[in-house]
Image (cartoon, rainbow over all chains, first blue to last red; front, side, top):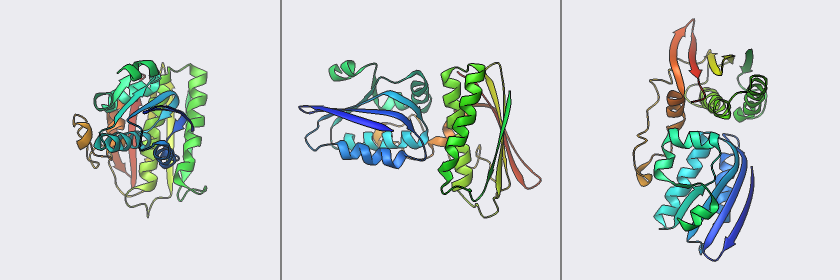
Length: 109
Length: 142
């Protein structure tokens, strides 16, 4: 997986691309947590470059969402590819995590 | 188109998840040759990852020596046949199903893998025969 992030005032946008599966899900969690700053109030995860996600990756997203929710921080995901969107729909993740078509939509949401 | 994969246990490689690139390669080859919709490749990959890693890492693996995987595709429908010589385990009934309607704070972290297999897979059949677990399922793009 590859990551990049962009912080603008209290909003952190994280780009994650590649594949997240049982071999690297724990690295995914560590990388995500390492990017969060106490001052971030809004975290947007851009998965536009994510090619594959298995339940191991979904678990990481669920942990991150629950953790940020407890801290009353906003968490949203955007730019899902068709294949990842299919997994989100079937797992019901699109019902519990805010999903937006683009980063711009997520910033306005 | 047919492909097969035979995995030994303990894995010849260092870690159970080292089998994932082997699965990915076979699926990519089939997907390219038969122009699969991207959702079929994703679903097949996810299902195989869940089932194979489940067999390799969960429960009693003391008697497990090999996992045999047979893939057969036609008209964008993929039939998966998975068998292993481990302890009796029926993922369709022996794994608890998560409640996917629970709100965020109450969602349990685990249990999702088998749920996805059961939801994305069709015509699921499990049988225990000749001291082996046999699982068959069919995957469609939607």
